[in-house]
Length: 53
Image 1: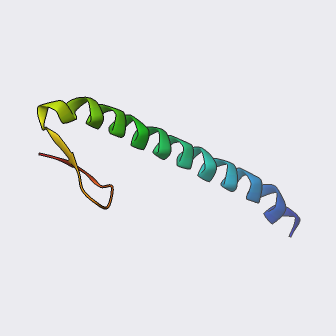
Image 2: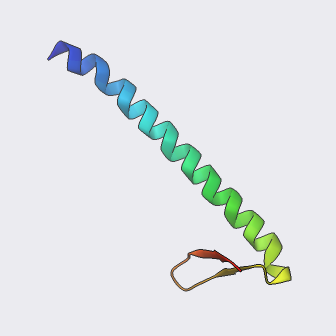
Image 3: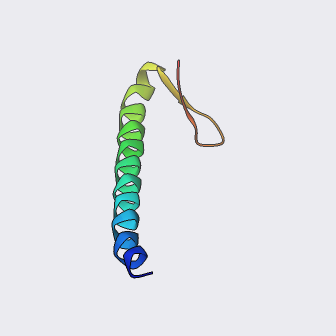
């Protein structure tokens, strides 16, 4: 049980870091998508999904 308590924060920390990286990538894609939207290269549908044409 003690071993589990030591391991748990490491797992959650890595998961949180992975979430932060995923969020950052998503935001980066949105910014790039908005910049390229003028060229009609990227479209965002009603669900918020980014499609590269």
